[in-house]
Every structure is written in structure tokens, then in C-alpha cells.
Amino acid sequence: MSKTIKKQAKLKVACAAFTLISALAFAQNNSNTLNSFNRDGFMFEFGLGGGIISIKDSAGTQGFDDTQGGGTFPELKFGYMLSNRLAVTVSAPGMIYTLNDNDRHFGGIIPSVQYWVKDRWWIHGGAGLALDGPALYDIEDKINDDWNTGLAVMASTGYEVYRKNKFALNVQSKLLLGGVKLDNNNDREVVQFSLGIGFSWF
Image (cartoon, rainbow, N blue to C red; front, side):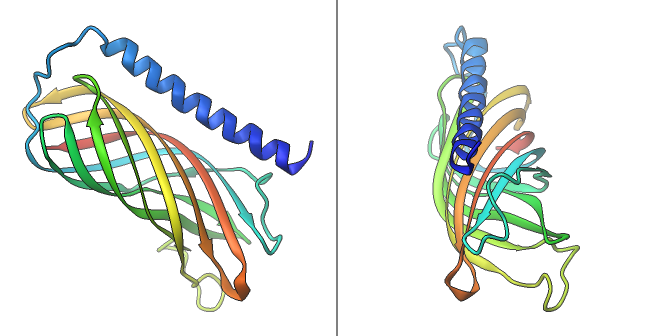
């Protein structure tokens, strides 16, 4: 199977899983017509989870065929509620991956919008700065110390499974696509899909 076909297959699987989780959340909450949970002012969320990440370097050192599993802790989200259903946010998604026996982190700083389609089900997306660098616990001078930037887009969805006072616990899925510039005019492209839980305060 060619690399192009494998790449397309992985993207289709990620998109299908993303759509499935959205549909399940919608089906579970379709009967809820009133928004009974009060969200106002500033919001904060941190999340943890895991997923898959595919990396491709134009230099040929890494290809989309080399899919890896990785962890997503910590993921952060800061925002402000414009209404009970709409928030403007800044998100910091990301995932650990391995390159040349070194641990690295691909993530971003993403200005975004979050909207509660139903009482408990929300969708979230945006575009912003992609960040690629060494995992903070695995920085090595002249080996794993390079930091790269570029562009990234993110889409996620989640369902609040538990709420009390100003706190909500949600299950969520996230798709992040990005690319960064490397030395010598090379590029690194990344596709990552993750499942996790989020802890939110409003």
C-alpha cells in the first residue's frame, strides 16, 4: 500500500471517529432542550488523554506510515463566556511523539470558539500557532533542543458527563493538523487524533 493511500486511510479513520463521537453525544443529549447549567465569566480547563500521531518530514527522516501512540497531558484551555452557550478561548493542545529516540512535543496555541449545541454537548475549533519542540524532560544540547513554529488548525467536540456548581467533567475527542518549518527549508507535517477527559471551571 502506498504512503498516499495509507495517509488517506488514517485521515478517514480519524474523521470517522470524530464524527461518531459527535453523533453519540448528540443522540444522548437530543432530549435536553433547556440549558440548566450556568456558565458565565471566565472559564478554565485542563485535560488529559491519549491518541495517535503521524509525522512527515520533507527531509525523509519520518513518514506518515510511522504512526505512534502518545499522551496528551497537559492540555489547557482559557476562555471567556460571551453567553451561556458561546465562549471565546485560547487552547494549548499537543501530544508527545518520538523522533530519533528522543521525546518531542507537537502542539499549538490556538485562538478558538466553543459553542454548546445542546445542554451538555459542545463543539470547539480554531486556528493558530503550531509549536514543535523537545519534551521538557528530554532536552539535550545539540541533539534534541530545536524549537520550530508554523500553523495549526484544531477541531474538537465533547460531552459533559458530570456537573456540579461551576465544575464540569467532560469526555472529548480532538483532531489537530499542523505544519512547522525546520532548518534547511525542510517542513514537518503532523496529524494527531486524541480521546480524553477535561476538567472545566466556569
